[in-house]
Length: 294
Image 1: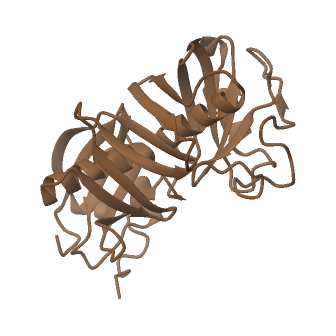
Image 2 (image 1 turned 135 degrees about the vertical axis):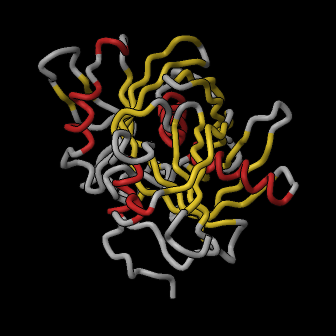
């Protein structure tokens, strides 16, 4: 894997949240926004929610870089972290790994039932850490939207999980036109770095349905950091305990917000769909083919 021609890749997913994974630890080049957009395109590329690059690191087992379909770089992705952890487990023959991301070091392990659990770190609740454009109570944001169709959306809870989230609680998930309202809320002036927009419908004492409009990606089948933010928001609002099972369009995740240190744990299944080799025509989409690692 030292050149750009014939680059192997894996197609993986966690609860339907799907990724193109490139192992660039021995490569002399890196993914740029142009290549990320080309690979993520579901008609002319491989198609995915995020492009994941594995790079060398001295701080953990691997550095995981995340690109959204629009070419922007994401700080965190819980489901991708779980997928990459499963690859590292297979490499080192152990059931734990440390994944470095832009957001920091993430501990992962295999659970007794074969799921992959990742410690997503602490939930950030201060407006500056999310971040918001100005001071505001993150438990209930002064934000509302009256869509052309569907119910009024108001007073979401804001949570930072290494990336910004706004979580709305709704009575009827199917009444929300997420592709219509998602982009408006993602780009709201209150979110200087844009935001992931979650919609939660409680279905039990410690169970709820979740759908997420992801920043830079749109509506996905699952969002790991969004699931973590949703559990934290639901607990803060008194709607559930510190551990809950979430139903997402692509499958189930279990989220726990630890009381002792404020860290959020996410566990769920991962799968490899297939392996392949990228054609040179796709790799040519790199904006600067000369870009290399020093």
